[in-house]
Image (cartoon, rainbow, N blue to C red; front, side, top):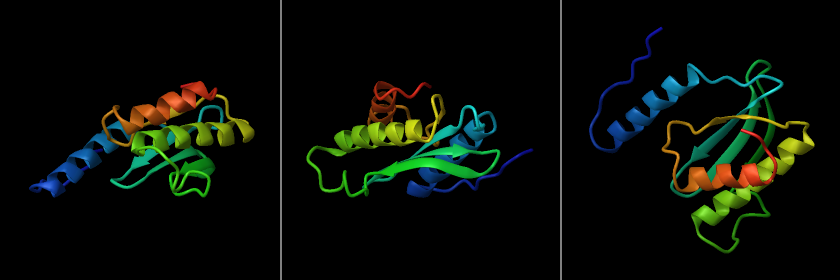
Length: 127
């Protein structure tokens, strides 16, 4: 099945390219009850992580840089991403999740995305 994303210019082109990458990734990655999908959504201001069971369509755990325990904390955006990664790992383990499939959402695995993933691994979540 072919998915078309309109070619545009400037920032719209970057968003369209990210959408194409995310579609390409999602063709191969799906969360199951045994191994749900850890989705990372990054914007210029914040970062969000969700653990999703795609078969039932339920979010099992989530964390965001807008959570009360993280918001307004010290450090740069990478430090906030590390806090979000450890928080989502703790919440996922509390929900009974041991291993996940990592979905970077079409973004490059570097910077805040990598910081979140490393913190989640250190907190005991298996990828």
